[in-house]
Image (cartoon, rainbow, N blue to C red; front, side, top):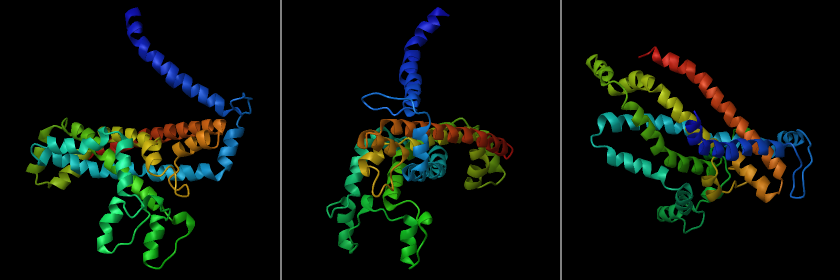
Length: 309
């Protein structure tokens, strides 16, 4: 017993100091009016100010806009993983190419995408479209809602609440999809290697097509793996910072200011340290709630899909 504790001690120290103590300290600071000069306990005042302010709710909306990339990525990744595992022979090269965007640091890839979507005439995309007569677009500086833009093509207007994510946010979603697709495909691919081939052979003997096999056999058996990748990817998305900071820094007009970006602005831009701590605690609780809801709903889904195999 003593030897086991000795081996666990380094990990326990790291978890205790950097996770448990850090979380507890942050919660305490969120209940004070902490500055560099000192702190006084003020209870839930920071949380009341946070909830009453429009910046917080805007950031919650923007954060869930950004998290929308997770279900899209998983839906695309399932058939891609199926093709790589069951259809394409010697798919290791394709798997490697898909996984490269995930292992390259997000700051580096975001800088490259920033050059592509740069609003200047020398931006890669603007320069490429110019010979075709396409006017220069501001891309990552465009706060126009996607739904508003599409409605404008038909001469229609939409209310403010229905404008949808901005064009800048749509670009962030595209970049995030590119970064996370390989990770999602590889996890699902690994899950498919554990599926009994006899299940698929029996379905083919019964005359099932490949899309039907994917939908009625592979997906139900793969449901625990799908749950894992959705939970992990959603946690990554809800607390993502690097990609957003490098490309948009929360702009334009705060249409890409997620809770992580709001917290950063409160800490380092506005010097509202205690309010930033309250935002960090709120983000932690949102992630905890979303994860709990996923596990609750997934139990029913796994039970339902298990009955369809």
